[in-house]
Length: 176
Image (cartoon, rainbow, N blue to C red):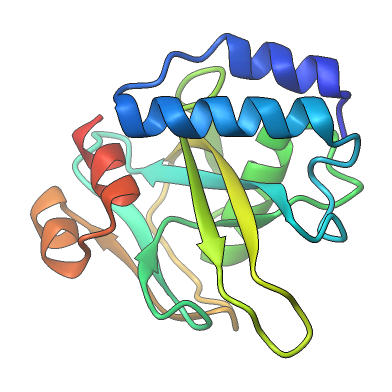
């Protein structure tokens, strides 16, 4: 994984879109400054995760999945692996693993959105924070293949997303 300095530079290049996202930005930046293994799953109080806001070419639809463990509709994403060189690379890997899409490209360089959310305690894991760094990807085809982490996986219009979820961080990405 890239150094703390490189990740801080990436965060410093991003301007949050609202007060809630500004709080997430400050929280994530402070966390990266204090945690040498800021991405590592074994950093039990929390860790950075990498997600992908995936749209089709004309930006009329985005991909959401129904997460098995969390029981909510969210964008693809997840834990950063030690082998991931950057957060952007982790985002791309997670997007391909969770959607089956292989022909993806970055819509823009840099961060698209930030969110901090609590993950509930499970039998082998304490309650902890996911500090989610999100990148915007564009799919050159729309053929999806669901994996074992999801109950469902769909291309959805803005209106369909607004019916399926009230998750503010997802709705913020729709507005962007």
